Image (cartoon, rainbow, N blue to C red; front, side, top):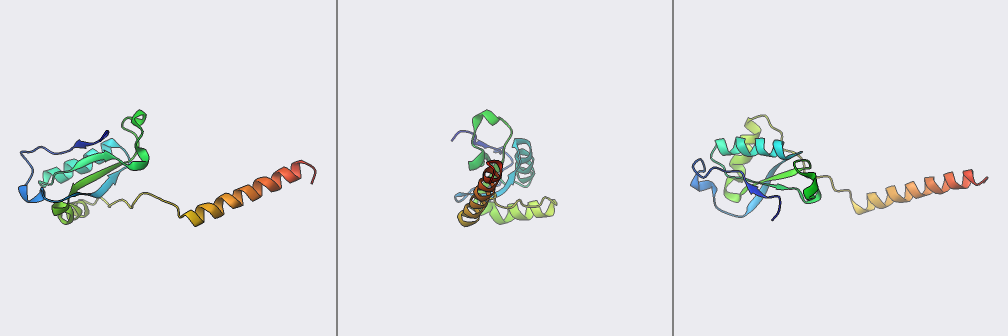
Length: 123
C-alpha cells in the first residue's frame, strides 16, 4: 500500500513482538511525529509500521497529514505501556462526526443562508 513503510531495524526487534495482525497503537500529526513514536517503540524492541491515516491518503501532501503507527497484536499492550511511560499521550481516534450531528449542522447553515438571502432580497 502506498504510504506505508516499516519503522523497524530487524536487529533490534524482539521476536515475541512479531505475532498477530497489525493494530493501531498511536498516531502522529505528520510523518516526523509518527517516526518519533516508531523510534521510541523500536528502542524497546517493538516493531512498527507507519502509514498515512485513511483521511490523509493524498500522496501530494508528502510528509504532511496524519499518520497511524501500527504494531503486531502481540506487542500492543507493551507498546501502550512504553508510550505512557514516555509521557506521550495516546492520541484519540480521528474525529468522525455522527451523521445526525452533521445533518443538523448542515440544516442550520442552510437556514441561516436562506434567512440572509431573504433579508438581502428585501424580505
